[in-house]
Length: 480
Ligand code: NAD
Image (cartoon, rainbow, N blue to C red; front, side):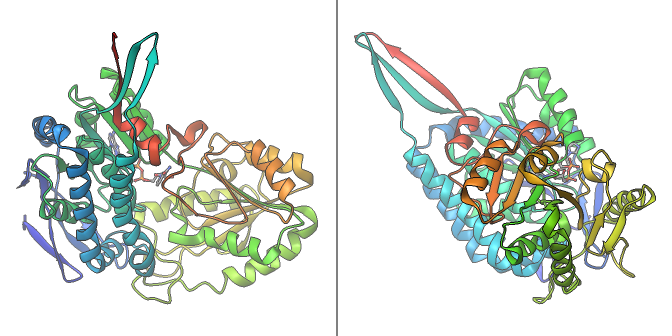
């Protein structure tokens, strides 16, 4: 197996990063580009032995990193952010080549936010107070202690973005980390290991292991030395991870799937509502937060659909490296199959494809699709497709809108388009969702909590909530 491969002109190490060293495995797996299906390289295929080695490295590095002052940890996180900014163009092109998401959004949105993730959590750490209060002369001293080695497992749809939402607060809190990126997008995690080492992060504080979740996952999540498991991915995998982590009652953070509603009331600015709806095709619909269920008030449904079709059919689908592309490929032939399966079963059950409903002629591209005539209890309305597929249902009045919106086992996000502020407040209060956007979408402030209700997740990330998870809170009571 070559130790390094060149991807879009960038040299990437294909091995694990364990204890400050590159480590190969006997086996490898092929990493494909969704852009043209080409093999980018063979990547180290870790299993229980690599999991054991990475956790051991994280355990050994923990005491010294935990004892490092907050200020010194923050300085290293800022240096990692500097490294991300310095290599921004390389990270952007490698991520696009590896997962097929738009280069222009990696350049201008995602990678700057990756750097910001490190800066934000470095700075937020410094604001966390060690609280003191008094009980009949006794002092209660509440401290945010590092928890220990953390296992972080991430998906392929926004690889470095989602990984660093976890890596940054975990490291800032004084923990050590074993990161396992998705096998469909392993490359930028390897570059992050280089950047962190260059920034002066001590050996063993951040470890990156590659491989299939089914082969390396269990050994990581059931390990008795692991103090936290944070996972972003699908509900079925989350169930397996929760069962595995239960062996040691390891605290879990789960950021899972969604089937979020986008409610359009008759009093909404229809152009804005259409823009919001078309935005749900971003990243070829492979976005956990996507508002894939369009719920439109009866009296504006026809006009909304007309304007939506006009706008959605003007989207340019193609090579994600091209600045003018709006919708790129799906990640993998298996994902394409899965998406098409959902659509064909829906059509067989009576749904009508207003636009799309099929793959494109070549590559892993799926045409942006809008389905109507769908039943509330049908698979297409209830299950996460994770592709550019939206359904449209109509409603009359707030009660029906809220009933349809909440009739799901998920609760990640919801979007409400309305021109009436009081209605926005009433409806938002009744929606079951971790995030509700009113007349906007995808606005994310790292100070605010992020996560899902129901089967969309357990726990919240962001600001103090991240530290709440990654720290062991301790109260020391001292007599007068
Ligand atoms: P997935 O569950 O198939 O895989 C996610 C990760 O889990 C991968 O790294 C995989 O290797 C690993 N894994 C698989 N089996 C494992 C096991 N037994 N033990 C440990 N790890 C294991 O998900 P995916 O297809 O990569 O991602 C898509 C899903 O992620 C969608 O459901 C999407 O909604 C969700 N997602 C959620 C959020 C959020 O913030 N809520 C963000 C992005 C994606």
